[in-house]
Length: 185
Image 1: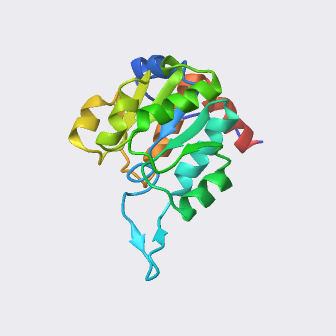
Image 2: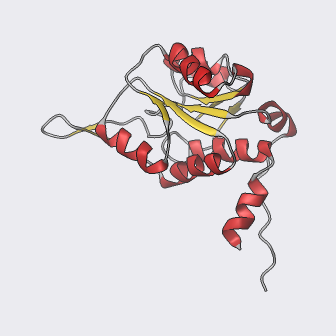
């Protein structure tokens, strides 16, 4: 019989403490769940590339009782298909004013900013990030966003940065080890 797989990830205790009460995690899309690049077909359809590590992280948050929510300035069919496949139920599309959109989701969930975390990469994300209990940015985020984040991921947006954020939230919630053990059983 194989020995149990133990978590190898480690985050500084102060980050885990700051994120331990998080019950909802807001995600931007372009530059966070994608690399920020946009591909346009000849017919004008927008195509995006999503990372499966990030997608699995969103699913793990749901298993841990943390609600993943998306607030994004763009809207596209591929994005809606991806979020539906991941079971993300709370999303607001096509808004440049992200704070009221996030407040709407908080009200729907009966949560407060003190129970929220956010990951963003550019100025439109700052009003949400600065109100949340915990803010995260991918390594390639804009300078003021990097300065506003409690944690900057090692990975770039669209290349596992959202998964790193999810893993941190899972560790802070105390659910990471149990989820890992379930997968290794």
